[in-house]
Length: 408
Image (tube, rainbow, N blue to C red; front, side, top):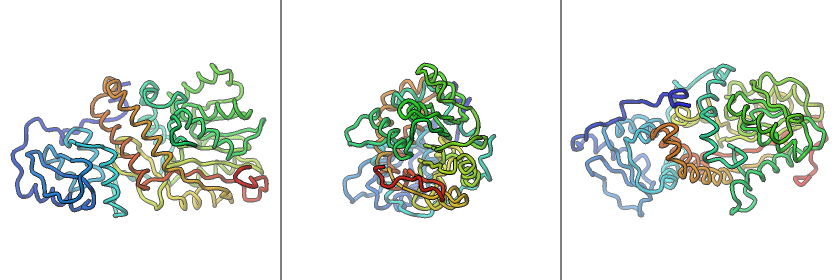
């Protein structure tokens, strides 16, 4: 797959073929303004000609070097969008540990009000938009993801019972935890919305004896999942459906969605809840596993533009009020696994760096830098609490067939 098939990366405003002239008073003022915006961060800022402001705090964890004027003034204008743009095209250099730098920046920014980016707004992730969004991210190619995911090809938060567990062990533990929370029993019917490369569906069928219908609109992922089901002799118990979640039909004992709610979009939450409501039996239950926030807010605009178009990580009240409450679905349990996601991302990032040359050959250097920043930024976001990872277990409000304790 060529890069042009999935996104347009060429932005000439950040390229610089010639060395800029020495910095002026205005450019040094801009650098000071940037430094003041994150004054508590242990980060040194430098211009292309070597100019830097006095730094008297603790030893900095990293240095950011602006290589041209456009990169500098774009940060002043809109750092949330343009830092990522400048970094991916090489208009800024980072010296030091990238994750540590981003942790410093996120902590220094705190809960400031980020500017609104109205060009990212859309009324609904309808079926057409949803397919385009998925194509731009998940259809980058199975060969690409296999370079740095675990052998199960799980692209969601793992669960580390012990900090020293391998990524493979932690992803198996995550699937086991999901199944235990759902209380799956042999012979039950499960519907999965957004199944990735199929590992959870196959795990539920193989380890718990259930039958699964798993929906996904990524052609590459569905093809991989179907081939694996055939290879493992589970095609008769797991059906992988290449279709939108809105088209789910039938009744099921359990509903599960791992890493998909972020892509539904706030405007479609009640529709999503309606699908759950019509899919569950009278005693049905379900689990939602998703990236979220402590307070409502839009996703970083650069991430939405370059990595996850149409994505929205919700706050818990938004999920409760829009997905569950309209259908009298009772919340049974909520768990936050954000530090587990930070550990997952650390594994992914290190594997990605080990495969960076292969990724560059598949795409280009701008793509490598973009994904390096995305993985490091995501790790920093979970480390600082900017992002959360929620697992919410729910059931019909009238059902008493629910766990008696968390160990049930």
